[in-house]
Length: 374
Ligand code: ADP
Ligand code: GN1
Ligand code: MG
Image (cartoon, rainbow, N blue to C red):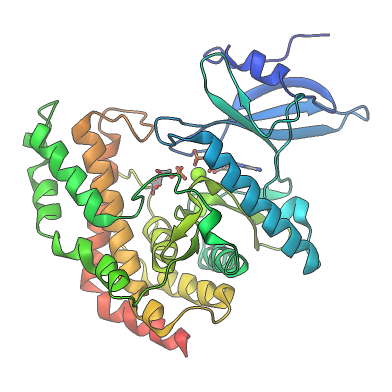
């Protein structure tokens, strides 16, 4: 039998693959997807009938997730809860939520000799994952994210670990940015004066959602917290968002942030790292499509205050993400995966252009939400 193919830069995969009892002949693994955090591979096997069986193998980024065991506990808790609900509602739990393939030792993850955690999941077949979408696909993703929150509304939130403390604490993100600016280890502040000023001018904005939460206006819910379009698998036959993936940040949070993070990434027609800012603009039509879908999926579960703050969720998640890209650029690009030395700077600039657009069209965004909140 031939040795399975491994990417030349990933010889460390051999013992990881050995740890799993694949049900078919293992052909190899290739890098997969466009996530910024985990190491994702697609593993290919061939069944006895010549059929192809695929899996997703992920190495968990322990610099980002300090406690991978806690993260896997969340993953198992949330997915088994969803599986039960999906089954009760007559859905297909194999396709509508993620699941784990246990190791030969019966564990939900494998720890390699370098201490890195790996998990294996069945590939959800018959789906597509998009980096940008038409209004109809975007609306389908919104229904799925809204429904995800709705399905988890009676999940015992207190049992979830906070996998990244202060993940969407925009005030804490601002403070981290200020510290990076102060330290300026690579002397990059000099070339980013305009971006730095953009953030400093918006310090007060960073407190808007947190103040509403502290005042008891916005409730804590179980939220996904990373609702990028590419964290949804779209069913190829129906065009519906069938499976919410990338569950590592599912923990208590604000509904407006789940709404907002999707808008940040999807309500425009450019890549997150587009270098030509004349191509970057916030699209109100996509915003409307997402709003319609999210409110439908959430099934009337959002309070009037949450509805009122949805446009703020969009502005804040976009601002916060831009701040995070800029901070990472100033600190030397150790958080987000980059493919060239100024990618984080380009990413930050697209976010700030989108924030500016949203600021200009804020009343129109409010009117759209009001129209669908009725
Ligand atoms: P990251 O945290 O790095 O973003 P993700 O969990 O989002 O990692 O996975 C990266 C990509 O891999 C996704 O955008 C998607 O294209 C693909 N993917 C992940 N899990 C599955 C799955 N179970 N089935 C099919 N594709 C998947
Ligand atoms: C990361 O993991 P991925 O690529 O889906 C990041 C998000 C950012 C996003 C920006 C755990 O998401 O918070 O919004 O990049 N995830 C984590 O594209 O930090
Ligand atoms: Mg992802």
